[in-house]
Length: 264
Ligand code: SAH
Image (cartoon, rainbow, N blue to C red; front, side):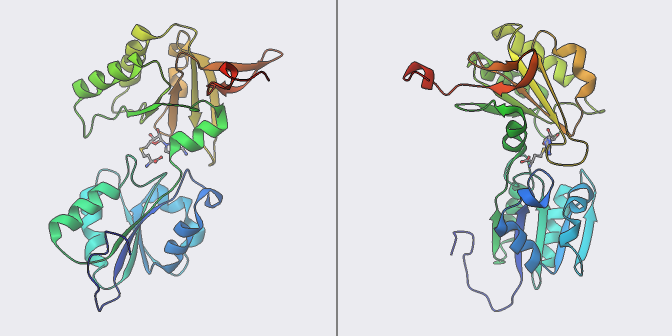
């Protein structure tokens, strides 16, 4: 079995870290659904638990609030000593999600509970599909949340990322606690990219309240109010363009480069 299953044990406890994708069951993998089905106890943030509610009948459900991730990880590990536990995490658990803190807690505890990380569709990927194909080649993801990373470090990385002039995806773009981070990030983008660079925003990809916005770097500031913590922002690279059809914006495309090789 996988590298995380270090020892064989007699008791049947185990811990799944289950990625729940963007927010509906159709976009979870069969493996993730099976792990949830097997679990006796499911623990997670209330928002993500609600999204998988149809899978939770008959199980013990433990709701934990945002900002309590370390306690949640410790609790999940304690429960998994003798029970099958699933910790749910939105999108992909390994991308700005719960997987690393759970693994660190397991590592520090020295327990031999088997742990499996079940992958899922991260927001960059699900939301990209709602815009067309904005990430067809190399791209960068960044989180604008400075809860766990100092803001100066985020600014340093943003500057390097936008210098590459490849698409940059901004997770955690705007919340009440940090309303100005998005403006600062877009200011850094403007140092390296022209005003007509495409920008796409998807709010609530594949869940209730889904909306999208297509604009440009130069005009984005007028639309900051559209962006909230359930949104993800795509800033195009130097080759990214808006696909227009009789004035309507059909989507955003970053060509992979076929036009350099073929006629079509
Ligand atoms: N582990 C998650 C990311 C958690 S960070 C993943 O892999 O997707 C939370 C941020 O992810 C949000 O602020 C938002 O920027 C983005 N996000 C998560 N789900 C989303 C969705 N369905 N639609 C749009 N953005 C989403």
